[in-house]
Length: 391
Image (cartoon, rainbow, N blue to C red):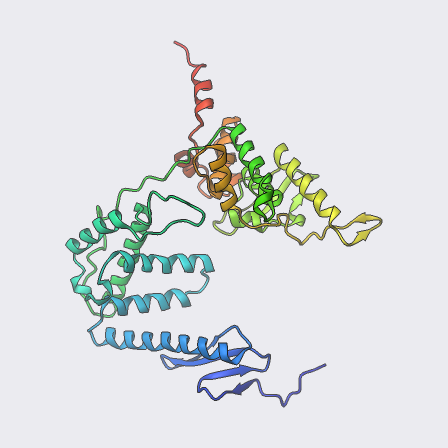
């Protein structure tokens, strides 16, 4: 049935600027910089739309106030943060996760630099930055990763500070662009960043890894999907996929005949790749496929049909189960990314050359990062290799 051409695209509400699209969803109409923009409020209920419209309107007003202040030369760092947040939100071609990470860097500054929003750009001196650095690296933000009972960094890692420092440099660039200050004191400045050494995971032996996966699978009394969660963790360790990459693998991406998995990576140019199916991964995929066939509701030519576009893995993360299993087995806490590390280390120990492993992991540097971070061998392998050295 075709839409009536006389039907209006937009329907006004009693709240000025709040419109209802003919499809049923609500939008906010705002004017900024002489242009009109429609902001989707992502709901079809009027009461919820009014609340979200009020929040968006407050953001727009803060942005207008910040713009007027910077143009008038009386901007504060809070005004500059508002402008920066808006630029991040409107930046084209940026993934949702990247956008959220950039905004987290601004939040880090707010949490670790007391009174930062009220400061004027000219008050951001090297002495003030050094004071902030010492406070941030000592106290941090108090952040604790989900599922972690203890956290050594508590939001005070050198990586977090350096990322926030880069954000501060961008804030001062905005101040220079708006003629609020003449120069950015961080431009070309070295020695301000904190010393950062990437953490190397303390990987357990292969037997311990198997015990961890078995412990997750045996955790039926805790509820949830223990078998699916265990196979999810095994999949990470046997393919080297990143967390989101693993969750995005579909059955149409698995080519058991050729022995490869097509990974839909997006992090780097090399992230979209083909990963070989090692024997352990083939065994896990076979178990998962058998479960899917038993649960299939459709048969083709008398055989259970598994839809090729469905996800291979039934769960998208398993950190809490992984943390509990590590504690039960008696090994240091592992993360999803540590399982990727385990894949890389195991491949190197097996004699696979580093450029090849780098390609399997989706690294675009040909193995440079792999040499710095992943090429640390487990103790048993190290002792075994040392026995080969003779004089």
